[in-house]
Image (cartoon, rainbow, N blue to C red; front, top):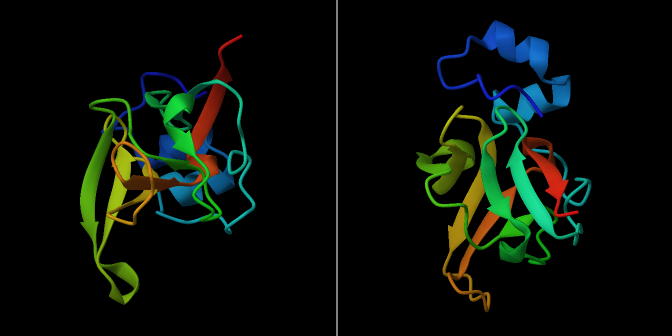
Length: 136
């Protein structure tokens, strides 16, 4: 995981030093990994998911569910860890989610899709935005 010292004020040149090219493209350039290819899409281990940029705890495995969307899906974030922004790219209006500490792009959140989760929300997150630490 990246250093905890990285945040929204960190210059892009520093991000390029600490992130892989794929992580940089997603976290800093708002890229998206191809559906069904991410390491954590079908991941079921108990533990916690941290921001691949700054190491902030974002999600816990007990909020992860199989939505069938091709990306890791969570129905809730750790309180205060995720910011939401209106995203008008690609001719539609979506809600982008970013790490509250470093501003790294995580993916998008969709609500009201009818999933039988406590929030009926689906945080569709790029695996490259995350680092996992198991409970053991």
